[in-house]
Image: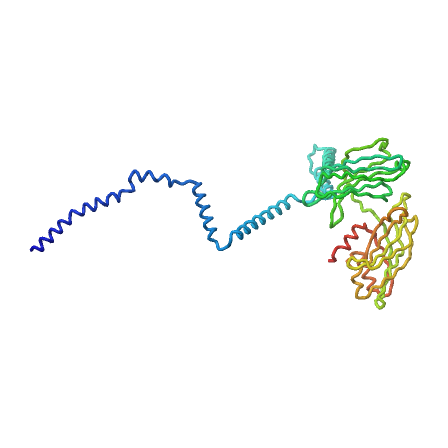
Length: 424
């Protein structure tokens, strides 16, 4: 019984402890609603700047844990930037770097526009109005060619015409990048024997030349001459494009005092200038390894002298891989545009080399005082096309027999470019 009472006392003594424990736990349960706790929350409000700082710290932390060093990461970033810059440059070049269309194409398009306007125009529209619009378009195209500043003076004491090429402005863009590489050719018509050229000004539509050229010519002969200044766009890999030219009849210029002026460049009709033809006979003997070239005659050669004639002769060069093996030349034929030579020249060419050599033919105008000017050029053999290839093939197909063929002379720069080009 005593034990039972003690147990009851212990139980009763333990009962009041329950409310106390509940009260003790109440403050802990209601602590989030305490006013002091509400005072601390404004520091956790959402701010974009905090997000950026947090993202930056997170990125730098992740970057620091990467297994590659920082210099490698920097190199990758630089490489990506370079690739992006290259892509942007290529896109810009493709969109804005189109080469200017040749004048003939522009004229054909202008002509088509005129025909369309004439055929589809309104009944009240007059033909004269269409022509006027076409004329305005042509004038605008001519304005785009640019202009050239030059000077003229004559030294009566030394009989010298002094031509100064000063500068050009607003030249037509002929290259893919929207620029040009201009230079100026200066000569007198009709002889064209003495030509001068300025230095090439790279990637410049407003070049400054400041170059002077002197033509020694008596004043009495000057009235029948025409001064020509041609502006070209230099091209290393193909024929140079003419931007425009200026022609000045010397009988219209007062040379009593120095002249300096600007003139607009005029468009040039690209007429293929005929240089003449040359008849050549080829003969090859495979067993002896001997190639015989006979220069028979030439006709309709270009006039190179003041009197309307030329003093032609022919130079023959045997070459391989651009290296000259042997050269020979004919005699000079005085005062003729249709010379007859009939002169033969032999070259030693082994049979295993005959498919690798070239025979280059150049017709020159002989000049006793100055340098000899090339009239035109052609070649046969390795890398030749057209008549040159056919003539060489006919020679190989008919050993020991002479095979004659007429060849049309081409400008020297065109043939030189063909000689340097790799055969297809």
